[in-house]
Length: 256
Image (cartoon, rainbow, N blue to C red; front, side, top):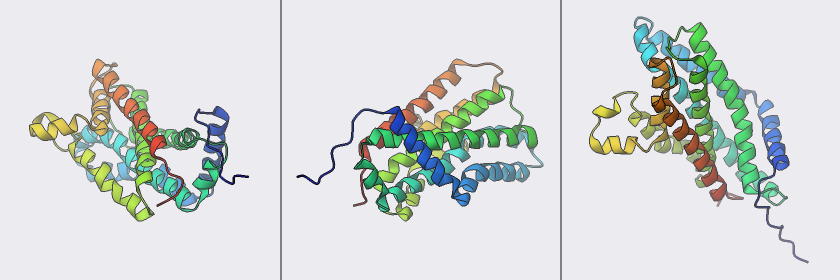
């Protein structure tokens, strides 16, 4: 009689996905430091930025909206990549995949769980920025929240994806300079993308954070929904879905 586990089902199951998400949320609820990192760090960073530019409120208005989307992306990337890697190095992932649980169910469950956290994170950071720190935007606060949420989900997707290529938590952290920092430098936050060298502008045009910043800029400057805003939102959402699919395809049972 074979002792090898039966192959996991290929199709997504809502029941298995929800069960995975519930398990991840239960684990998070017992880790106060991780919850604090996810929910409070973006708020602390945006508050610090506000008082750094206390004498220049227009500067805060100009870059605050963009950073409102970037900070959640960074924190979700960091926490998700480490949490997923820990599941693999502890053997939990191998035991889960030996059950009737497909890789797609696992990735979707993680995305759903951290997506729920991302909603809370984005709500809190957006509310504090607009009503406590006085961030002045022309567009709807709900559109600002939408872009911030999509940025956080993109960070979650990127974290799930890169965790497959890390053998330790230290390596997972090292992916941040490789994955996040180039996007941060080329997204148009420091220098307008139109003013970059052609080669850098071409690279910037394929990085999702560039469109996240552009989307925030559209909310900052326009009262209604523009075609560029719709384009930016669709690109960020599409990149998140694509990276989640790649994460499911590259997910490994154990660390090599």
